[in-house]
Image (cartoon, rainbow, N blue to C red; front, side, top):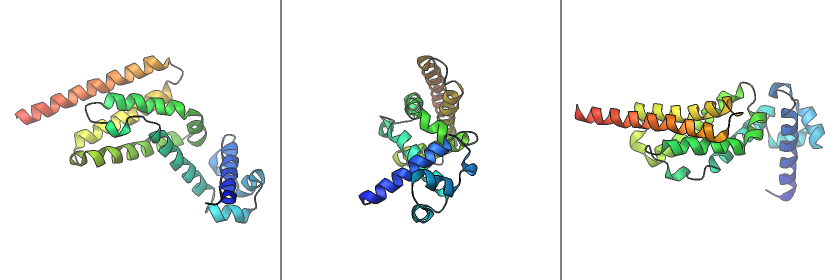
Length: 187
């Protein structure tokens, strides 16, 4: 991408984020965005199909950025899901202002779903034998979604307390899951 296109892309995204911080996605018009970005409509349409495509692109970038900010993502196992939950919460913290703008209102469940999909994809690339294991899938869903919603609903709480509680819950789930697997093997 040449420098001019890069600048235009940045202007479009910045204008979108400014507008999105003030109003719902469906209330943003291309005309309004173009005025704020100092571009014409044809320039916008050469980059994006519509406002929703722009939003989707920025949301996808945000999810990728959140996941990239998790320090030990490649070292996750089903034995250290408490670390996954902790680091996921810390990744939310580092992206909270962007998340609050992009995923306000009903978008929170959308973000949680996208994160779950991407984390599961990464985990199952490493452990393909667990992809069709319902217990592993449920455990991962609970850890990812649970950490997300626990964080989201308790942002005002002391962060160390929140992280400790989330880690303890996930450790208890891991222990239960390991006991369940052991019982299954014995039967």
